[in-house]
Length: 288
Length: 308
Image (cartoon, rainbow over all chains, first blue to last red; front, side, top):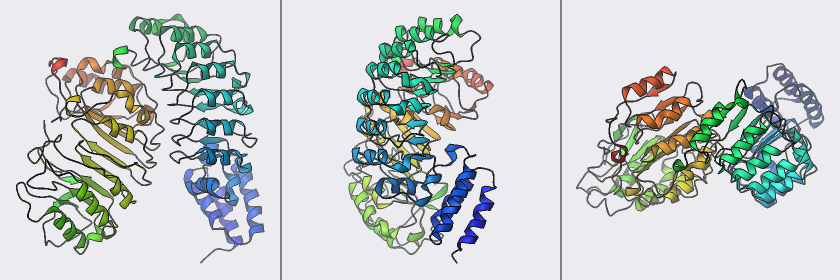
């Protein structure tokens, strides 16, 4: 038997006093999915829920798959405003749906957006970069897509970059040109995590990142499998004390560093006493 | 070492072989195997398949194992007719969650002789399928590999084609938790390189993947190195690099790597010495190794467990 609005409100109160968890979040969004009557009370309930959920981690507030699809295909559900994390991973987004996402005012509260493995191209990143509705976005994952330098150039020139703390462009088609654009952008200062595993930055790309005066907040940098040679890695090593003082995790695996250089790198004075997780595995050229 | 026995368990169930005219008692308590006996085509496989699907209780069957689909000319008959018939019979098997196509021993046909086909129609016909296994590389395709519910994918080959690896690297399997690929040897069809594994190793392709087997490879050391530098590594609970060509020297990066706590590591059937395995265990790794081949074997003379 369907519950009336007062029953739903009472259930909502109970849920909001539970500790944050994926299970409670699921019950919450199911409750709002079921709330089809007494719409005025539902609005009050949404306001009430929103206040309580502000204390929750953003990651827990992930749109259920049906809601995410609805955002692309039709109007978002009323409770969409509770969402902070949207994942459309493995959901193909063509240029039209990327533009639709970028044009949605309901993206305004989204903090984390996962568009990995979406067949996304530069148009998707360009649309987001030009969107006026992504002002709260802090983490963008567009790994395993077909982003090239053009997409990264657009991002480097966008206010969106100035907000991003985490950018994941793993397994795309970015070269040193994209890296240079990012490195030169004064908007890159908020970045704490930059993942560019398996692109084609080469040593010039690493050099550009190493010489950037704008990446001092980086804590995590993944340049694995990027055709880096010793010169690029050496530039990063030299940049560690001044340009990358907060770096805690550096992946340079699967590049073209020579064995003597890898040994030198591991024993360099710049690393001594520094809390840095360093991955230099798989750098024998014959193994690539 | 070739595959000499049929599956005895599948999808957590004991395998029972279905005979023509047999009643299905407790249809959901077994994985049902259908196969032609060697040198016999009576009954014809498609008749056996139709009889099975029309038997009372077939609607409750959860797991199905397709064995030799021809008793006399298996080397010349591919799986396409079987695939088409099974896809057509899908409405009679609404509970099917697990399917293996090609449970064929070396006595019936060596793994590199098995003639497979495009199994994509099965993925379309069984949208609730959670586990798919296939053996044999020849002709094997998996359609566009876009399936909403598949949790486990196993592809056993003596040499995996680059086209198949590329297809897997472009898949959309949002629920996939377990991926097992037998990569094999160039001699038997492996025509790619380790870089084709990059989408899988990115950690983005299959967001729920926690069990990864990239095994039976003549480039097992390269595969291991690629995994150790890849974003997928922290997400893994189990890593299977068994049946390959690893020697003691190849494990040096593993001894230095930062591995996820509790990672279960299957190193069975490589060329590792007891002292190396012990050193790994001393590092706190949960190492599984049923047997090893002679660790003194020259690297040039090492082979995958399964090839021909």
